[in-house]
Length: 414
Image (cartoon, rainbow, N blue to C red):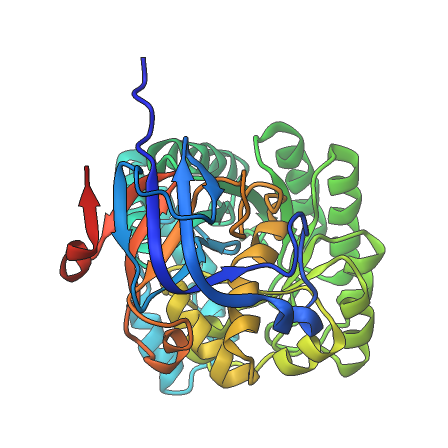
């Protein structure tokens, strides 16, 4: 029989991030200023947020003086699990070699596909589990992973199985997306591969479907077909679009009811208003923009237009080997001219909505899963102290999952 989780009280916080009201599935970014950062206490019991009145009898007492208490970060766009790294490509990129040329020479996605094929299941899972643990230390309590490095029917099916195995190992919420249309495998065509992608979508255990629309990958008609597949299989549609060039993919994605469109570095100005009006999240990936020297997504414009804006790491071995949501928040504040409330909203409740989890995760509300992050200072320091990991302690499902050694004095177990 499993022992009950200890109760906990985070007391005397200088700031507690709360939504404008309980029960919201998301908050559009023109209302981000309505999130509150007032001081207070947070009580956890039975793996849930129990309330906001101090409980002196709780099993774990946390001195949150001078600190901010946030919901755990939700990283809704990563490429876990994967094998190996591509550091040699990064040097080529920073010296001016474009991604398309690297990909044509056998690098990019193809290089990660080779690494995955040559690495045993246990080694893939071990590397990915280490990364998931590192993410937790930076405050990420729930995340998404993708297939996409299989580049064959068997390889993609294996990637889906590995994703589910990783979720079981980390023991935290992990969604799995079938990015079956990530790249066109050698020896086939995009049209022919879409037949395989449909077969994979019908046989693999994944939560959503995704596609990469780009000159080196798939086109808008393939996006429409993936929308049809998603609708037929009852899964949300997501799409990597407008990363390297404008292809006007947003109208196609919206026509097919996409849950999110991701990257958007080259988003056409005409597509900002329709996207902002839709229930389709704009997932921005500033780590990939910086490290890939991509254009900067119109984050300020999307926020002002009232988009459901979201931040994620895009953790992958090539274009964004980044695990830290605080680092991504810092990039977003600087590059998109966002406030700290806008950035925190994009990394919590709105990110949870992309994965269909906002009724359970993403905000501090009584009854929700107790995924809670204690910072070592005020929320404004997250983007300001760029590169510093501000996470002092993390509760995942009500359990104290991580404490930074220099912050251990804050925690008293009774």
